[in-house]
Image 1 (spheres, rainbow, N blue to C red):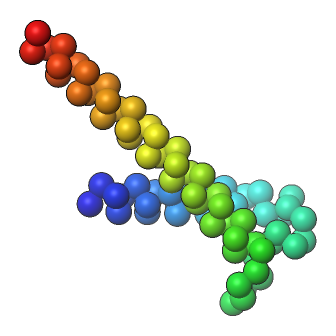
Image 2 (image 1 turned 180 degrees about the horizontal axis):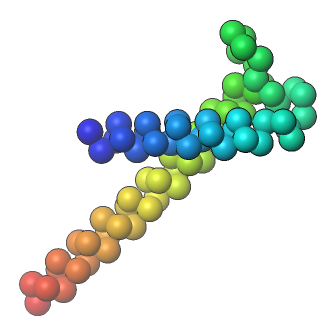
Length: 74
């Protein structure tokens, strides 16, 4: 369930960022409705970057929690 939440958040945030910056992108990088084009690939790239950030933050938080629990046992 955690992976689904991370992926959903990445798609929502990635798409929001893409649609906010889309007017400033070159015409070729803008997505046209109902077609597979470079704009869709750029949008996908935004989502992948956001997913990487979310996973990195989650991993660091998990590492931090496991270090705290290991320190508490000693």
